[in-house]
Amino acid sequence: MFKRTLFATIAALPLMSTAAMADGLISIIVNDPSNPYWFTEGEVAKATAEELGYDANVAAHKGDTNTESNLVDTAITNKAAAIILDPANADGSVGAVKKAVAAGIPVFIVNAEINQTGLAKAQLVSNNAQGAALGAMAWVDAMGTEGSYVELFGAPSDNNAQTRSNGFETVLSQYSDLDKKAQEVANWDRTQGYTKMQSMLQANPNISGVISGNDEMALGAIAALKEAGKLEGKIIGGFDGSPDAVEAVKAGELTYTVLQPVAIFAEEAVRQADYFIKNGTLKVAEEKQLFDCILVDASILDIYSFSGPFQLDR
Image (cartoon, rainbow, N blue to C red; front, side, top):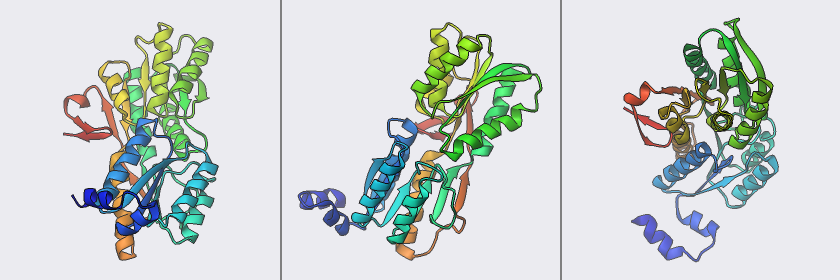
């Protein structure tokens, strides 16, 4: 009721005035909301900020560090009380974070790390190494210990891509009869997953499986395999736990997905920001905070249900 009355009273005032009359503005900067993972990240963070009495806005850099830098400038101009940032680039986003810190705005990183500690108040991310190992072991259980496969790799600028690929390799390299025929970068994108899968399939028509750094690329691979009439019997692993991936698991097209608890750490980042704003101290002492992933396959869907995107409940 308070929020509705507030907006009705000052609807005609500029953004800075609106922010000043609430507990402050929390600026949320994500990658690309057309991907359901990043959409959920932004919406959960925004809803949490508003629940805590802040104004909140969500903007997207779409992987571009120049856009990210401009969005941080806007947050500084708007006198944001805090910034929640999913960085565009592990190295390239450091400068934008430094600008915010120099302006006295605390930054809380979510989902993807930056390659410098001591700048952000916290970096809340999925335990990608744990999730990759979890997925790779499930992939071997389904695939067996021999056969040929290909890998779809995420955006090279994101540390998560290499961490997941390394996690896959740590497990799969233990089986000498598993033969990786190709690895292609598809930048977390479904369309690129589709086109890269087409080219890998043309060069390697007899592969038995696909392991993917995220769900969007895996879903693109499924589309390409379907189109080629080669989906049946293929072992395909995803990563994120997106609604479309869960449906693909239910349909028997995707072997599994590894759910990242994005709804949990997006909410927690805002709550930690709120604590810092109000107390001037950190709620959690550790800068880097890891959140374990959960394997979602056909068996777990009989035990758990989804209360919302990326939110698995008993």
